[in-house]
Amino acid sequence: MKILVTGGAGFIGSHIVDAYVGLGHDVVVVDNLSSGQRKNVNENAVFHEVDIEDEQEVERVIKTHRPDVLNHHAAQKSVLQSVKNPVHDAKVNVVGILNVIRLSLAYGVRKFIYASSGGALAGDADIAPTPESYHPKLLSPYAITKYMGERYLHVLAGESGMSYTILRYANVYGPRQDRDSEGGVISIFINNLLAGKVSKIYTYPGMPDGMFRDYVYVEDICRANVAALKPDATGTFNIGSGREVSTAELYTLVQRVCNRYSDPVFAEPRPGDVRRSLLDLSLSKSVLGWQPTVALAEGIEQTCQFYNSLSAEGRGSL
Ligand code: NAD
Image 1 (tube, rainbow, N blue to C red):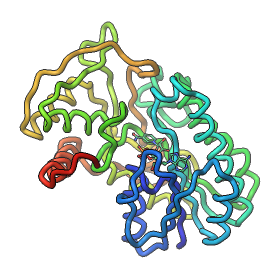
Image 2 (image 1 turned 30 degrees about the vertical axis):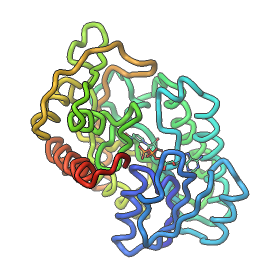
Image 3 (image 1 turned 90 degrees about the vertical axis):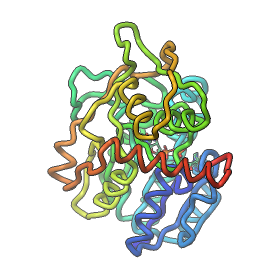
């Protein structure tokens, strides 16, 4: 199949590109390198440095390659940035996906896969584990725009011949994750421990161990994106680990797995931080035939090895 992956130079997108290339698919990547990196892009994929806000440029790429599948991972992915600059967040996450959906419909894309956020949409839900049917509370501009992407897909693609799969990820972690942003807490903890820096644990009153999150390894995310290629894999699916962990418990585990130890400091939560999230995986198991396979300690070990090898090579950045 010919598959166009937007955001394919980023953390998650680049792993998905590797998985698709490994299965023999023809892969085209669109990315403006705002947070992704050219060196993440698989050498067997065709790369276009294009901004998804630029409708003409996106059209040029889709018209040239005529993909069967459009896998949309390009996004402004930071909750904190969305609070600080909601207009930029809306431009990338709303105008950007609108361009990509409309052009996919115009050029006969058969399947659209959208990376949504279960963590942001189900944040602080009163049902845990939270099923896909839960009405989202949308506690940040990022949660609003990721949800709008889903709604646009339902409305614009719903009546067409283009099928779509929405994958709502929990907190994803693994090699290549940006260790400087606020989102990749496992990368941040590992890199702080390797560099001898102090880590922060954000706590709400009454939650001394920090917030509870559902951490899923990027390899399991890739398998979900492969499962989503099947024609009958349509709908909205949570993709998580099935387990919630407090930040303090996570920090203890990262220390043990990496065999580095340092006392953390505790701090006030940041704007948009949800207290807990845990996704219900029943639907993804029954319909997609998908379930997580990588235990948290094992995923942390793989991630720690990746950053250790970068340090050994003396590379300061990812
Ligand atoms: P990332 O920042 O590493 O990847 C996003 C990619 O999109 C980057 O390569 C970036 O350069 C590119 N991009 C950003 N704006 C663009 C634009 N205007 N035009 C073209 N390319 C653009 O982030 P990630 O963590 O890999 O996230 C990938 C997707 O998964 C996002 O849609 C994000 O919302 C979603 N998601 C991530 C998580 C997580 O835990 N990391 C959880 C839920 C959902």
